[in-house]
Image (cartoon, rainbow, N blue to C red; front, top):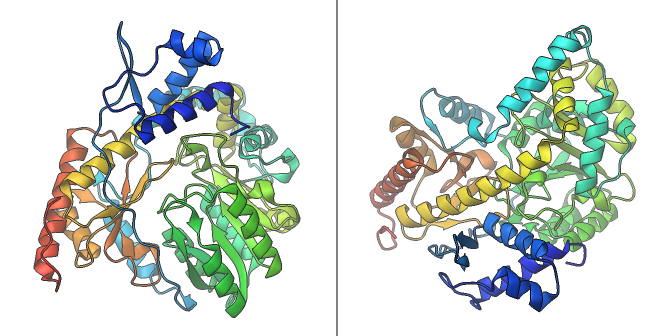
Length: 485
């Protein structure tokens, strides 16, 4: 808390008071003038704190009246249970994953499955302006090859952004990649050989399972908590039994659970990895979408011996279509650049230059502040809709950022069947079976909340809830029949 700005500390204290019930829904919080006198701070500082609380959805301003605690329904649905450890295996889900993904990408469906922001949340006009300038004034370079490690002005801008994640890095240590998956792929290629064993969170990002299959790697899934991330106890138990070559995880806002590893546990994780000589690949693609920036740094910020390879991209914040990611590979950089030189050379020249120009013009931080606020509102709206429309016994996560929601339905519901029925109604979801090489999450789904929460999205969630209830009844489980909450 000591690292927070004054207005952030004031906002955090008032947020805690609201959550403890000191100020109840509909009640007025102290006026700006009164709070300023109480704390001996300026009116501007209090207004900043109140704006922060408005962004969190905790208070609302009423014209000529003051600020009031926002009245909203309480989230009472529990969070999902933690997974169990199963033996290492080769990936067997790639064909199922590909089948589900191809169906999910159909034209005309409401995309509740893919973790892709709606175009309304992307700075399309600003990007278009910068790309137009690049093509007009720098066409010779923009339409020529770009070689590894990538466009130097872009690497410089990424180095500046990495400071927010707590990582001090020289631009020369950054390699621009063709998105984050490209960075993950090169990380695993330099760290492993076919037949090696890697550890992953459970549930995990399905793209990692596809990569492991492509590279002939075995995977052991380590249970993860929806709030605090990967279980260190389970990781230690697995590492003491099997020769884990690399651990791939997301320390901030994991996909699909949305958990964030607190910094003390991040340091414990790296100590454990050092003890068992495990290399760590950090996928930080959602890190800039933490609602409270500055509260948790990247795992890489605690790396003291070059153990962590850091990967990220602008796909979730700026545009998935520009395909701009980066990798900080430390002692493996030369090998990464060698791999890149004989595969993609580098990312697209035009988009590297356009993104660099956009970052240099200072609009990115303003854009991030805006979408964090929108995604916070959307997550709350989706959570309340799930609580209202889905069967009794449904559980869901409470992410502290990002835009994905993990929903655990009553065990009788097979979400592969739910996926099929939803598609018939023009709705796509991501069923739990694609996030694991085991059968543990066949009753779960991941929802994309980076969509405007209008009539269409709410009707889609209502339909999903009704379909889930139908499947629950049809399963005729031994327990009592599912009921609507």
